[in-house]
Amino acid sequence: MWGGEVSLPFLVSAYGNRICSMMKEREKMEQFLRVGVISSTHGVRGEVKVFPTTDDPERFKVLKKVLLDTGKEHRELEITGVKFFKNQVILKFKGYDNINDIEIYKGMDLLIPREDAVPLEENENYIADLIDMTVVTDDGKTLGILVDVLQTGANDVYVVEPPGKKEILLPDIRDCILDVNVEEKNMRVHILEGLL
Image (tube, rainbow, N blue to C red; front, side, top):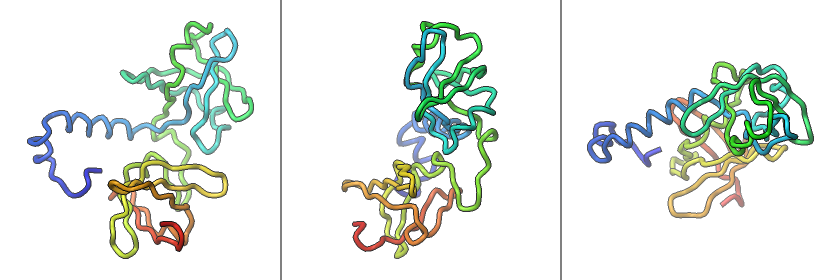
């Protein structure tokens, strides 16, 4: 995340409390996983359209509540209705009964606590755990930082940002992604011919 090993005391002395505050905020955010983004209102009775960011939109049927990330706080919302329309989920929240109550939340994230997430299978990771990971080639060269994951249907594609260079797209396939270490925030990859 910082482009190399840097001790916390150095960061505090060099950048002050702002860095510590940012690190604590990041740790706090990693407790939660985004399951959707409110894209618009639906009708006039307080329903919203949600673009799901989870692999399984059907999971909204079993969710009882979500946390709305307002940017300043996490507001707990109780889900009272779930419908599906095209690639979106239509949600109704308790206490929000008209369009004026809910339209101010357009564009905001819906989160769940990590402990409420769908359990991972072997060799699966939450996207939130991959972001900001250092990507290193199998010959030990640092390639860059993983900044995004594109979900294409066939396989995910990792967007790696090298310092001062054009981003690199790496397919999430066994021949390319050799090892992912979530605890150490690094990924070892093999660059297939034609990727660079």
